[in-house]
Image 1: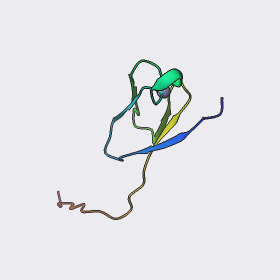
Image 2: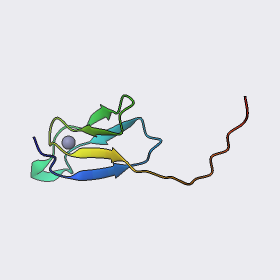
Image 3: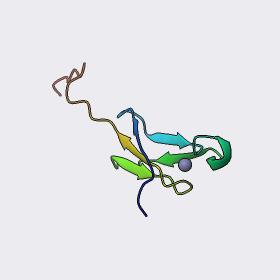
Amino acid sequence: MEPREIIQVAPADDVAGCNGGGGALGHPLVYLRFDGKSSVDCYYCSRRFVKSEQSSGPTDKSSG
Ligand SMILES: [Zn+2]
């Protein structure tokens, strides 16, 4: 099934909440787990949630 819509979420998010956008096309709020993947599809409305890529950021790795 082709995704109806691509929705970008923060890369730090572990789950994405979707309610179909509300209205007539809406559906009960569900939480979709990424489970380590970079994208997940809503099984209600086929929207695709993709983690936005942020190459640069305030990441500070400590040696260890
Ligand atoms: Zn949905």
